[in-house]
Every structure is written in structure tokens, then in C-alpha cells.
Image (cartoon, rainbow, N blue to C red; front, side, top):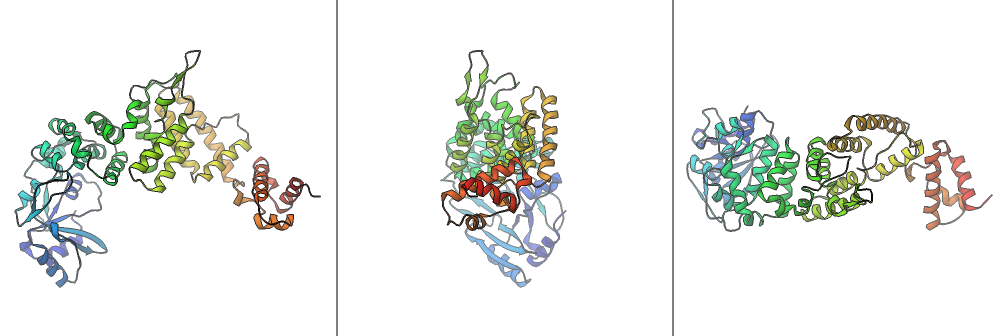
Length: 450
């Protein structure tokens, strides 16, 4: 259903504007998928779009006049309106050196990447404009380049990754000739800025079929271009606790964790350190000692290379750091509280840790039922302990630093931090000790004062 404010814009521009909904918005409208973008195209030149929109009381921003684009604000939402255009030569593997305005709609659609993105809908109603068979490809679940795929991928290297991303998001297959063209355009793909690569990879990982997208990255050579550190995971056999090699296990975990950036990136990297730490014991058992630390290091430098946000890097690090922690019935309450405290230090909720740990268990493919039963039992126990709101961090102590300095009659220094850590350990063992009186007594004993 066309967003109602677009009709107001069409009325402002006039019936001769040929205002069209284009690109991914048309694709998602036909698929019934929600979307936030409403990209529009028109035969009008930018000055005419600006003049008519302003005359109708709409706010207009000249965001890309050199490419024929202006932005109109509709109900506080920016909507790009671009004049029908054709592109000049692509010399940098990303953007055309020039554009030519005033072409017809079909020529405008011919410059787009895939047939499913090369359709247009008249805003005021009318027949779908589909010169390249996009609707049929939507019905068949196919991602096909518009025209010659070698040309399309030679123009813009990011399109190679977008093909894999759409396969993940939509669950589609890439048409054979389109897929075969990707390895031949890796040099062009390698020119794409890291920030743009990260954005596409992030969308791929958050897709409905991330395992499909990742598999296509591996098959096409894009994985070796942008994430070469992951290649050793292929065929890296594991021990009796797994039925998959490290790569297949990784795909299983990625598809099972929540479809959010942090869990999906953490799932991709959580066992990346296994190939380099793989060893065989005297009994023939395979081990991966220290793989958590190596996986964490790899995740940090790869995400830094891809210019990921610090917030995402912290979340991924926290999930990887704790992914091998497996509380058991043998743990005492104090050990459980210490674990909850460590999660808190990393700003990782019990629920997020549990969802990731569950996916890791399921992705192993063996002993699943027993693992899940123990996991659920311990999750219930940890949840009950957390619900009691025990003191888990220094900020939870009944006496803060200032109170402890007054009690000791001393100014701050290393002794204070040592004392606070001692008191925290005491209340983790016995939460009932977290009172002013109880901590005062423990503090004075620690300081050797009566």
C-alpha cells in the first residue's frame, strides 16, 4: 500500500511528473515486507521538483543535485526524489563519474543492479513497470543481474556483496550466470570502502537465512576477500562433543542466535580461534585450549578493520568471552553469583548470554537433549538468584568508598580498592553481610583495627 503522504507529493508535482516508486521499496511492497525507505523517481528536473514542492508547503533539501536528487520531508521523514537518469562510466568501482538526466523510465531502470530492484510503481496508481522480468524473478526466488552481470559488477563492486545479502534476507538463490560473474569481479569488489562492506555484511548476518549468505560468500571468493581469517575453519574437525567441523558449527550457531547484530557477529567469530589452537592429546582426544581468547582477539581486529562501532565490538567481545561458561548443578550459589557479576561487568544480560549459549549447544549436534535440559535447569536457578537482587558489583556495596575512608580515617589510595574487592568477595559468599554494620565489621577486621 502506497504511503499516503506520497500522494500529497504527487499532487504537488502535478500529473505530468510521472512520479514513480522505485527500487527496493517496490520489491518489498510486492513481497509484503515492511520497509522504511520510499525512493522515488520522476521525469521532472530537480529545479522543478524543488519549486513545485515548496509551492505546496513542503520542506525540500538539495541533497544531491549533481546526481539529480533532492530530498523532500514528508511527515518528518526524508524521501529522496531523483530525476530519471542514466549513468556515465564507473572508474572507481563504486560510483559513476557523471549522470545524464532527462532519459525515460526504462533507461533509468536499466542501470540498476538486479531485476527485483528494477521495477517501478506509479504513485497515483497504475500498472507495474517491469521491463526486465523482476516480478517473475521475485515469484521464482531468484536474484538476477540486470543485463550483463560482468558489467553490473564491474560498475560497482558492492553489488557482488549485495547479491549475497539479498539471498540471506529474502531466502533467494542467485541465478547461475550472476553467481559465476562474482569471482571475476573480485578486484573491483576489493575497492569498496570498509564501512560499506560492514553495512552489507551486517545486513547479511541479520537476514532470515544467514547461513545461505555466508555460504555464497565462501563459494564466490568474497569471504576470502573480506574475512580471510575464517577460511581455516572449513574442514577443521572437532572432538566427540561435535558432529560438525568448525565452519558448519558456526553456520548452525549464527542461524540460531537472535537476528541482531551483536549475537550474529559473535556467532560468526566465537570459534574462529579453534583452528590455530587445535591440538591432539596423548589419548587421541582433540582439544582447543585457549580458543576463546584467540577468537576474541580475531573478532576485535576484524571488526576494527571493518570500522564497526565500539558498542558492537564490546557486545561481541562479551558474548565470545562467556560463550564457553557452562554452569552446572555442582556450582554453589556463590559461584553462580560471581558468574552473574562477571556478566554485569561486561554489560551482558543473563537472557542474552543464555540465548547465545543455547544456540551453541544446539549447533553441536550431539548430546543436544541432555545439554538443553541442564541449560534450562541452570538458567532457572541463575534467574532466581538474579531476581533476589544480590550485591554483584562494587556499586552494590552498602558502604561506598567515601564511607570506607571515613571509617578508616584515611584518604584514598590502592588500599581502598583492595578493601572494596575484599568486601565484595565476602558478600558474594554471603549476601546477608551487605549491611552497614556487617561491612563495617569486615572492613575493620581487614584493616587490622579493633
